[in-house]
Length: 193
Image (cartoon, rainbow, N blue to C red; front, side, top):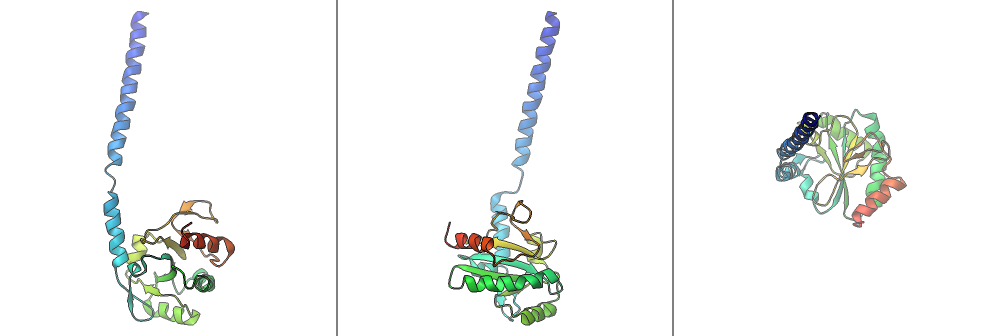
């Protein structure tokens, strides 16, 4: 009986030791994740990359640092993208004279088609042409339209998506950006609330 009791205690100790060592091993594997500085460096690089614009110039997202920036990824062949443009144009008008900007990024698209799309829909905000997919790849864009909102330092902000309820940095699918909820959210960001 005493032997059985000692055996149970020894088994319990080994089990607790195993759990503790497993915990330590998992902690060390967490520290092998990329350093925040590495992520910050990659973000800084992509923000400073110059892209051709639909207007014929060059622009980088870092040109807009210090502002809240809505970045809308689209393609000329995407029907949902075209439907979203009117609400983005209204948003630009609503926040004119503030520290808020909208930037379009044409991805999965031929630059000539993207320029025609911008012209046909009379898009008033800058549109970056990303035929090589650098921004698409960095922000893991897999479908269209997708919208990100960047803080004043150019970092993607996370929100609870009203469509899905998920906390995300990417709003996937078409939206009405000029309705009360998105306008209030953006106003809060611009005002620092």
